[in-house]
Length: 427
Image (cartoon, rainbow, N blue to C red; front, top):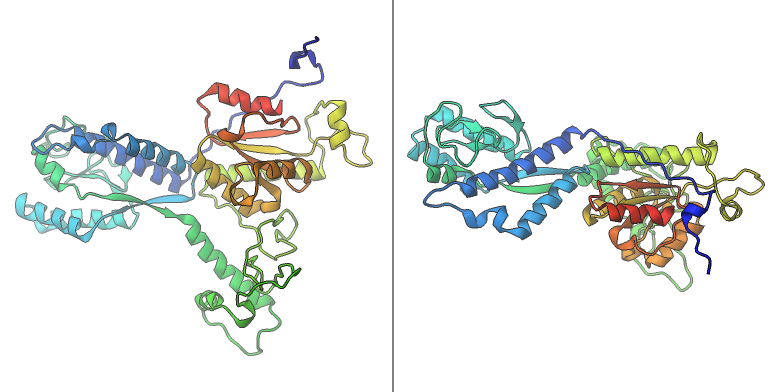
């Protein structure tokens, strides 16, 4: 028996690694700071010793909620999501009444706190009166000063601004009790995109009656939501394929209303040639997704229209499989893996990649509604249009991905053995 290892194969070059640190966008910073401040606020208030101490509500005693808090911090770094503090009218009124009736604050101080709560639930920032840092949520001190979680801890018993002492139980009861809710920015993006698509259809639609005037683009959007007679949902006759109209451009069949998935936006017009759906650009505030998409576009363009500046040494088998027809050069087409061990990040990036490149260009090894993992893997290997595959921790075992040219780790992998295994699948 003869044992061979990769070290014995001189033609396999060592993989090269590079790490890019991306600056968070303003929205990402605000979202992350709000979540981090919320975690610290919970730990401070529940660890204060008082008659009504809420130790049972501490994240240190609630593993389920602690795990969710960590997951939320992770998602916040991906972009596309915004945190909005929410408060009921009852709790809002209780805070203001406590300030005025129990702590004898004048109308000016009560208005300051009222304005702070109003700004918070609209997603705006307020300044800490001690250090000046701007956050969405702050502590309310019985003296009506607003303090961030960095300017006090569980031993603080006096206001950091005016040194007026306060009772722990009064302090805890005074907090407005914000709940942090996610606002998905994709909804706002869709509304703006629908407006643009409606305007584009009016400008290009030759069937529109002459003399009809559109006064407001919002009217276009509203009219677009009304389903015309030719868009009524029906069933296909036997053997009929889905049909699409360039008039609508939403990718939905005019017969069954089922949305077309296997689009390819990698063309000059960035539009699917079959269903006429347009690609969706990744917004700048989603910094990490924006970087990955730009990098993939650069690699794809280099692969299709120019020679890479880096010489890639490949085996004779790889040359036979991947060589361009009629070309004597050894060429490996771009095949990239986007890897994350966290499901929430995996799904978010997958959505962004499909919106920009199209479902025909992206394979999803986690299956879902698109088919089996084997079908997606075969698509990634054999379909020249498909150049990206989403891979999670569950799919990183036992795969032969030796044809892959690039791997994008979407987040830091703290288990280095897992990182080595993912790399080993492709090298």
